[in-house]
Every structure is written in C-alpha cells, then in structure tokens.
Amino acid sequence: MKKIISGNEAIALGFGDFGGVFASGYPGTPSTETLEEVARLGDVYCEWAPNEKVALESVIGGSIAGGRSLSTMKHVGVNVAADALLTLTYTGVNAGLILMVSDDPGMHSSQNEQDSRNYAKFAKVPMLDPSDSQEAYDMVRVGFEISEQFDTPLMLRTTTRISHAKGVVVQQEKIAPKIEEWEKNVPKYVMLPNFGKLKHIKVEARLLKLQEYAETTPLNRIEMRDTEIGIITSGVAYQHVREACPNASILKLGMIHPLPARKIAEFAGSVKRLVIAEEMDAIFEEQIRAMGIEVETGKNKLPLCGEFSADIIRSAINDAPPETTSPVEGLPMRPPVFCPSCAHRGLFTILSKLKVFVSGDIGCYTLGALPPMNAMHSVIDMGASISAAHGMAKVNAIAGRNEKPVAVIGDSTFFHSGMTGLMSMAYNGGNALVIIMDNRTTGMTGGQENPGTGVTLQGVPARQVEMVPLVKALGIDNVVEYDAYDLKATEAAIKKGLETPGPYVLIDKNPCILRYKIRKPAIKVDQENCTGCRACLKVACMALGLTATGEDKQKVRVDPNVCNGCGVCAQMCKFDAMHAIEGENNANL
Ligand SMILES: Cc1ncc(C[n+]2csc(CCOP(=O)(O)OP(=O)(O)O)c2C)c(N)n1
Image: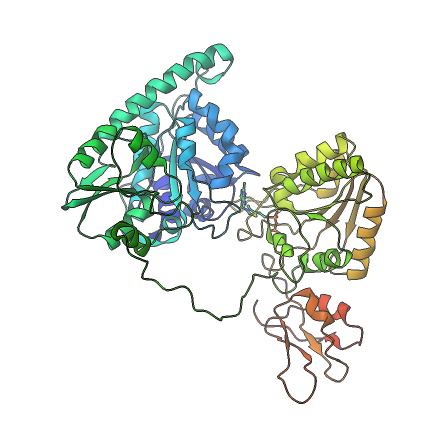
C-alpha cells in the first residue's frame, strides 16, 4: 500500500509494522508527531514520559524485557537522556532498541543547534540518517535488525525537513511483534566497574564490526555519474545536492556512524573533485581528512550554522555568489505573542511593571522575554529557571544585594526537571520566588498530555499529579495559589512573595485556553470613554488594534473574532472604556 506521509509518521508506521512493542518519549519539535502517530496506530503501546531520561530508561527496560522498543526526542533531549545512553551502549540490548532523535538545523524551534551525530560518535553506537519518508520507514526495520544483530542501541536521526516534509511510502507486510525471553544476566546488565571494563572492550570490538557492516550495506550507496565531481552527503542534504548538481557522482551515506572508510576511499579515488556536503558540524569531513583523503570543498566553503539549500551548495561548489534574494525588505516584524486570553499574559504584564529579574524557562511563557513585556532575563534549558534563580539568590546574598530573583516555569517543565531544582532550593536554604504556570498541558509543543493532565498519550484516564502537595513535599512551606487573570491580585501575590524571606512558590491554575478550547465573550471598547492613551496595548494582545487615522486621536479597537474575553486589557484601562459583550460568544480561536 502507498501512503503520502511525513518522516515522523513514517517512523511511527514502521514501528507498528516492524514488530514494535513499547515506545516512550518526551515532546520536542521536530520529533513530537512520531509518538502521537504511534498512539494513533491504536494497537501498539506508547506513552509520554515526564522527560527524555525517563523515556530512554523505560525503553531500556522494555528492551531488556524482550520487546522491540523506541524512544523519541528532540536533539536537546538527548542531553537529558545522555547519562542513560552512555552506559546503555555498554549493556547492549535484548530486543531491538531505537533512539529516534530529531535535529533542528536553522533552529526553527529550539534553543540551540547541536548536531546529534556527535552523540553517535560519543556513545559509539550506529546511526542512520534518512533522506525521505520511505527511507525513514525502511530504516526502522533495518535499525531493529542492526540493533539485535550487533547487540547495540541504534540512533535514528532526522532533521526538521525530513521529520515534517511528506513523501510517498510503500508499506511492507507487517511483522508480528515477538517478545524475547526476559533473562537475568548480571554481567550484561549490571554495570559495576568490573563488568563495565569488559563491556568497554566489547563496545570497541562492536564498532569495528559495525564498520565492516557499513562497507557493504546498501544503506551506503555510490551513485556514479560525472566523475568530474563527487559529493559525499546524507540526510536532507542529499536532496539539496541532487537538485543543485544533478550530474554529480554521489556517495550517499544512510548509515552515518561508523563511516565506511574503504568505500569512501574508493569513491574519493574515482572522482576528480571531492566535496563533502553535511549540514552543521564537520563530522564526516574531520573523519575523512583523518583518513588522509583530500577534500576540496567542505566547511571551508559550506556553512557550519543553519540549514542548507540547493543554492548554498551550488554557490559553494561553483565559487559563485548565491542566487537567492533575501526575504522581502521593509515588511513589519511580527514577533510571536501569547494567544488571546492566555493566562501567561496577566503574569508578564505585572512582572514587566515590577521590573524584577526573571529567570526564565522553556515553554509558551518564554515569549515574556520579547517586547513589549521584556520580562524574562535568562533562559538556558528546561528546568534551569529554578536552579539558576537559586544560584542568583546565593550570589546576591554574598554581594549584599537585596534583590530576590523570580523564576517562571510551566507544569510540563516543572515535572520534566524543575522539581529537583526546587528541592535543592528548599534543602540549601534558597531565597527565590518561583511562579509555576500550571496550565495543565505541554502547551508549547502542541498541548501534549503530562503527569498533571489526568490522561495518558493513548487517552486512558490517569492519576493526576497535584501541584500544591507536590511542592510542599519538596520542602517548600510557602505555597500560594493565585489567579493570573486578576492583575491586582497577581501584583499583590508577587509582592508578598518577594517580601517574604526564603523560598516562596506561587501557582496559577488557569488552564491553557487553546488545549481546553475555552471561549469567553469578547471585550468591546466604548469609543466615547477611550482616550487613546494606549495603556491597554501594554498587554501585547493581537486582538487589540487602533482605529483608522482621522482628525480624532486614534482610539483602541478590539477584533471580536480574535478576542477571547480574558479582560486583562480592560484592567489596564483607567477610563472604564472596555467591557465584555455579555451573551455574545466570539468566533473560533
Ligand atoms: C530537553 C528539551 N526537551 C523538550 C523540549 C521541547 N519543549 C519546549 S517547551 C516544552 C514544554 C513546555 O510546556 P510547559 O512547561 O507546560 O509550558 P507551556 O508551554 O504549556 O506554557 C517542550 C517539551 C526542549 N526545549 N528541551
């Protein structure tokens, strides 16, 4: 059967078709849809874990117990799971284990642009790099086979364009899942130093065997065309190379770690000019140069940062300036803003007013860093808001500065890795105000379930973690709920939290309006009362605009199709000019 699907859907389909038994991951663009699609298959077990480390460890357990297992995450998720990965490579697997990791060259929706191929080298595990949806699908099958044959975890890497672009996939016959024996094998699975030492030797030997496999596997293929120029490439870069240089010879690497040294030497020897076209780091190039092979074009001409395009490759190879023009000039900037009636808006309106230092985190609330709020002053990685605020407070105390930092974090991020930071703050006598925006969803990545939503990935009702008892159990005595839609109450709550010495936690429990489809009557502006002072515009809501320029001063207008009636703008109005239109409901959000 033929289907037109994305790379993420193809991997999910492959998991269902090639004997997949257990899948666990944590959302993160561009990987998220993979596990959501596994859930849609309906007949394969899958779950969201609270973070990537838990996801990978659960999958390790699944493999040890004998089921083919898959873990999905974005590139930075592997940093969280790396502790497990770097020892999993020693234990090896029972049933096949695939770690799918999605890189984001160009940083469409990520905090950094790290290249996961480094992890394959670091962990000494095989890595596959599909160039389209069909390959993504097929590589799940061969990935499980390699994992089982070589007793190794396997990394299946995608990039944004492979994860999200759609292509034809010819489906193969389904392989029924087969559960292996669950055996107790202490030297294999207990990584005490004495067992670990022996395992390290095995890992190095395995890598040599994998290298031999890489020499002969059809995953790495030479496409001989014009011998004037030969290009070594993989993944999405292969598609750009084909477009840019349709007549060039290509060594297309599908298995990108370990590299097939003999095949590379054979290819290099058969072409006059050798080009290495790899997005992001110079992983192939460094290894190929270390093989003593001369490379004409690599990172000397191709960028280390951002995505490739056919144009970038063409101009590097031909030493010519790029043909593409820059985006149309003169267009107004449209920075992303909070959704109309998102509860985060109320909080950041007040934080912006109070001009406190806000140690931020990763989620929808990160938009509070942008104008006009400008109310978030550091964002590092998931969970860092609380631990970083703790460090700031300690140094402030040493410096004699009387300023208490504020940490802002969402529920999914708190469950992911904020909890441990808060426990440390309680334990180490910290002094920060922590604000948890508990909107009962993982909003930023599209509203996934998490331990607070009361539902699993497969739609089964679940135990719902309660925030207040959890925070108290971590050692925090001052835990107060507040309503971020009520600006006066929010300001008072924050001031109290800042004045009270020691750790203080505020929790807003307003749900995500998008995820829970909350509709309220729109706000209407009384044009007679509106003075055009624009105080309401400070809340940065896309439902607000200005009336047409005329002889009068421009006044504020509200688009009833966009407004969702939270009333935060109305609370900014000193002239009683903004009111809800009772009984009316607004259009779709
Ligand atoms: C280590 C890591 N994993 C995953 C992500 C992707 N990601 C960005 S924000 C976010 C969740 C945000 O949810 P929450 O904290 O509940 O805040 P909300 O967006 O709902 O306001 C995720 C999963 C990431 N940036 N880093």
